[in-house]
Length: 196
Image 1: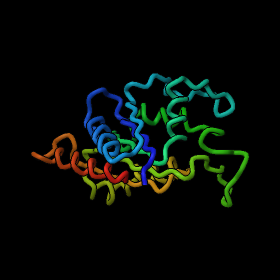
Image 2: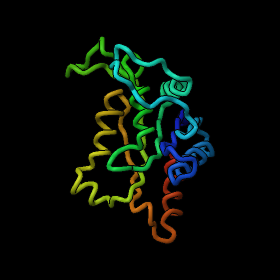
Image 3: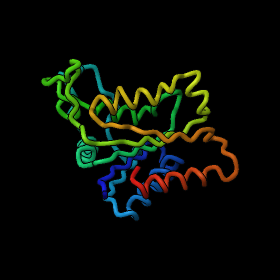
Image 4: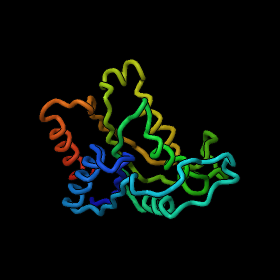
């Protein structure tokens, strides 16, 4: 089944491994016949600071944020390629989520789920995060309990109804072994071809 796939390169720098991986996924998915939208975080102009007004006094959305929300609504499957920095998302990517994932846009505070949480508004979509880090996978799991993955899966994507959220983790990214990056690119290409 062909899908509408929104791919976001979540690295704030113009040249990055995340950009390469996002573009590889998008290219392979497009070659397989899927409808693709590709966006690069470094090209989005918006104020990433949510501000002090809370949800009652939100800032007007810049055009880049409106387009981002339109792309989320359009997509069947969302792919984000991002590095892990200091155990979390890069500040600009987190700012994008903070500014765009708003009541009435991605969750409904007027309607509640059976557990009392706001009703998610992006149900019916799936996600894949392609995460690079220097932290080995065993350390992410054993010492940190996969905290970043849990935050993204449950507190961000799951909260707004995007599930399942799957992860591809490439570690030791700053000093890869010879041929390792090429292997990562092949893996991402296969994921894109399958829209997985």
